[in-house]
Amino acid sequence: MTENAVRKVRDEIENAVVSGDLAPGERLDEVQLATRFGVSRTPVREALMQLSAIGMVELRPRRGAIVVSHGPARIYEMFEVMAELEGLAGAHAARRLDAKDRATIAAAHEGCRAAAETNDRDGYYYENETFHFAIYAASHSEFLAEQCGALHRRLRPFRRLQLRVANRLMASFEEHDAVVQAIFSGDAEQARARLRAHVVVQGDRFGDLLSAYAETARRNTG
Image 1 (tube, rainbow, N blue to C red):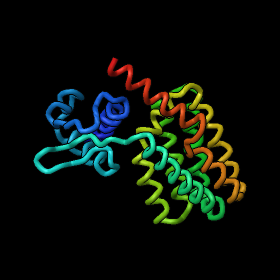
Image 2: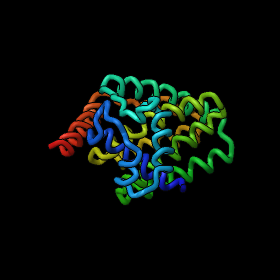
Image 3: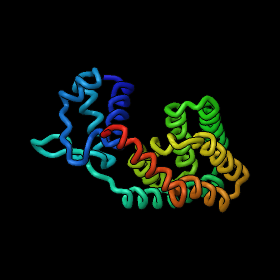
Image 4: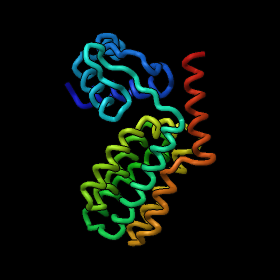
């Protein structure tokens, strides 16, 4: 079993759940999923365990995996909390940054730039994850990094969906750039404010997310 195989299956299941192709309450059969994705049952089982850890599926005795429903209000609440946690991580990073942190964040930021400039949504999605996790590490707060990482993983499929909104990749990169400038200059309050604004989903951006969510679901059920 390879990590890439597990990631492929996990991502495909995430996309199917978010798009509505796999409905809330639907049972996920390991054999059927293995056939669908052209893999053995082992990466499917590992992918389902990872999805269970973030609350996307529920593993039930003798029933296997069941798709869990996430309504708009729940998604909004998770993004609100994520924004506050990331803002705190950014503030800590601005105060505690060392040379290794700076190099790691800069490299991740350049990875995001390359993906944004080529409109590579999948590439940006993974580079974006690396970027955010680099900031969590730079906070030098193990507990905060753990909490940020856990919630980031729970919101992973919805972050991916957000990147499908028109012009979102370059806008996201520009927001990253402002965050990097604040952290590298040691401005904790600006780092907090810019990261919070980058993550929180409200107003037009929340509407865009829900619109993309509904449109994807319509295409898959129409």
